[in-house]
Amino acid sequence: MEHTDDFKISIAAARVNAKKTQAEVAKALKVSKQTIVSWENGKTSPTVDKAEEFCRFCNIPYNRVSFLRSSNAI
Image 1 (tube, one colour):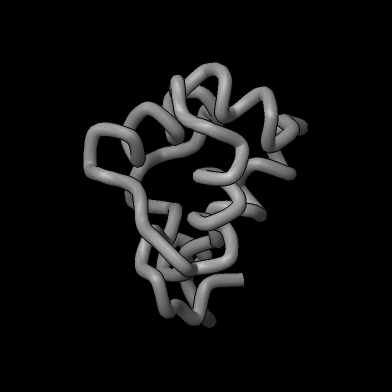
Image 2 (image 1 turned 135 degrees about the vertical axis):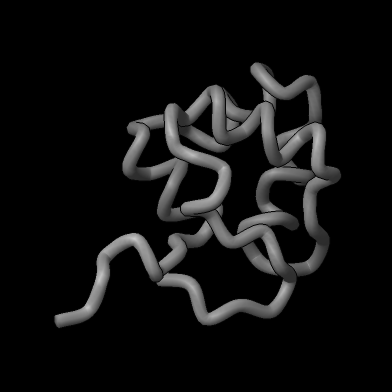
């Protein structure tokens, strides 16, 4: 049986699961909405500090989100 702790979810999926809009996340993290869009599209990646802030804001463990630009996250 596969362990569910082994998979990571994308930034977009984490945000949607937290029922947050891109604008809400951007405001909370003090970045532009375009920055959030770039993270979600894999064009850029957040700094470690912003990734940690994102996880706290979305109430998801840091190790459950894939912040890599090219990822197999769901």
